Image 1 (cartoon, rainbow, N blue to C red):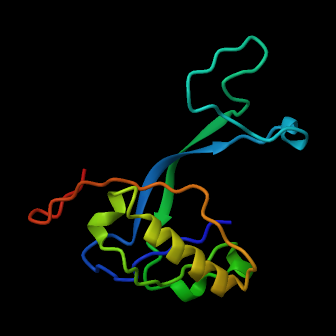
Image 2 (cartoon, rainbow, N blue to C red; image 1 turned 60 degrees about the vertical axis):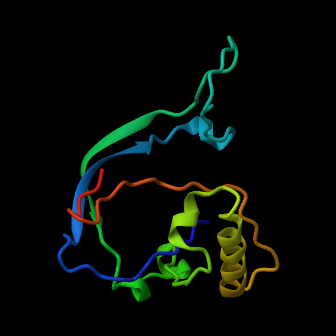
Length: 140
């Protein structure tokens, strides 16, 4: 289960939705007995393919900005929830693999409390790098 933590600041100068091309996993009866997989490293085998997934490209999928609507979502109703959390980790340290563990422990604690779970463990994380110019307001 993925529970994103986002900043709830609404920027009225930004569009409330964008359109994007997304890829979705195609349904396959194989997945009844075998989980979808894809090796992320070069893999050569005559018996095991690099992936057993087939993806379907969908054009012009609308993606809506959820900021300001956080209370509209719940695990029970929508399958995900948006939580607010002020981290002790400074923004610039999120790109430091050694320091980000502070945030991961905070995340585990927030999720454990919110979900009333006996145990929560972050076993994998990723950071998307977006280069933005504060001066021009443009991002790459």
